[in-house]
Image (cartoon, rainbow, N blue to C red; front, top):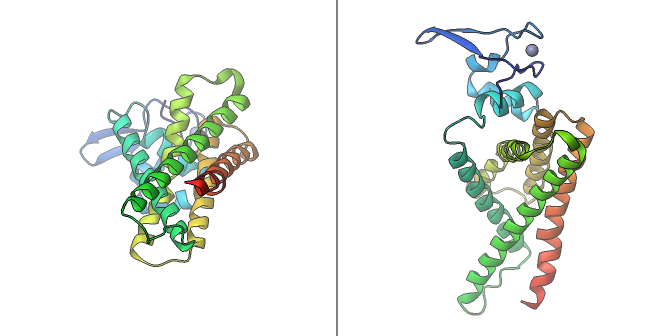
Length: 233
Ligand SMILES: [Zn+2]
């Protein structure tokens, strides 16, 4: 992926020139004549606030200029994100099922192990379905401009833009109503849609539709279909 101007999305060779340590000059974009990426000099909190506000500029900085496929350890980072999200998803499902008394404490020691296994299978299957729906939906909408590199870029965009799941860690420390899980899920959906729009330049409505379909499919699998199959388990 090329570096991009966060204002207009125009490709740019370099974002700044460094004269000496701590002494840099930000480059201007040839297309819009604005500073290409002012976030380079901003505090992380400002970037985080703009991400929470779903500003396209912040997502361009995050996806194109901060994390790009040229980063050496990008695969390692993607795996860490994946494992963290799988763990957090499993935690969310476990908490929701506990509230439904799904975790029966009576019986043998084998039951909690089997329940954990069931939750893990639900999470993996649900995420696989969601990612598949996004990739297929994007492929259909982009048609000719879709190739294997786009798969990697879109996977990276989905992983990074799901950062709001990390707020689930707060629910491990403090008590929240279960509606917080729904709010986090809706936020992740809208964040995924903005990242998909930045990455593919599709219309907002199409990106929202693709992400909504993906999250609905995941919900259908993990909260409806899989519990139905586990009745006989
Ligand atoms: Zn520009």
